[in-house]
Amino acid sequence: MSGCGSSKGRVFGPRMKMDASLHKEKKPEWLKVRLPNNPVFWDTKSLVKDLNLVTVCEEAQCPNRWECWGQGTATFMIAGEKCTRACGFCAVKTAKPDALEADEPERVAEATRRMKLNHVVITAVARDDLKDGGAEHFQHTIEAVRAENPEIIIEVLVPDFNDKDWALEMVMRARPHIFNHNLETVERLTPLVRSRAQYARSLAVLKKAKEMAGGKVATKSGIMLGLGERDEEISQAMDDLRAADVTVLTLGQYLRPTQMHLPVVDYVTPEKFQEWKEVALAKGFRHVASGPLVRSSYHAADFKPEEDVIEAIEADLAAMTP
Image (cartoon, rainbow, N blue to C red; front, side):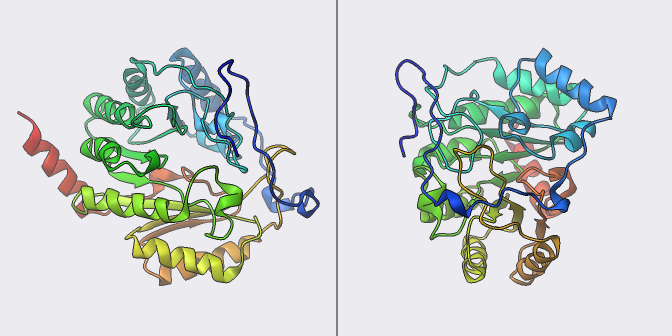
């Protein structure tokens, strides 16, 4: 699949590579989401608009945005809302991206201050048009948020930066507390599900991120279920993530954004998600969020990185301060 729009900025969607007849249209009862009735939801929406920010909550059509925004939390998507890749599962539009906004890091920092957040998630579209894949923009945003809110827990959800070590080092130099890069699916389905991404590359990025931080970071990844994966493949993906020293795992149900996207082959029951959580914990993950509506950033603040990780990062940052 071509992951980038034309020079005229036309928007392209993913091209389906799986049999559309596999799709199960009717959603089960457990996937129904209540609409917002909390005034905090509208306050958060107004704040995001006021600061001209983009959230993955809206761009990716997250089913939990009503709940999370109602609690005054959001996941900020930096580097624009146009992605250079066209993954078969993702609702974010594919097109030629706009130039980076130099003041965006400060606007994100201001949002975290106004929302009085103690945990922020910063993510981005894939920016294959940039030499560093947007890594320096991540670095600046992390630094701006920390300068505005020294006590905040900073989580990043990053693309693979095309496995450029020097780009990844920019992000890790800014010392996020949690480094998240999603595996998204099992190895067999990766070429169908993820545009340009590679299963082994994602594992390598996760492993190297922890090594670059000297182990002083919590690494996290997520897998979608319902795309036709087999039980043994899910188990193997968990083993592969543990081999890469990943300690935090999210498991959620894939939901089809449009008819142009990949079909939902199966709706996994809440009971099955609970079983997978128990399997993952038995394999050594320290924290597992597993359920139909779980997404990478869902209840992210509920996960408290190991105290030793936080203390080590803060000690390093203090030592670096003149």
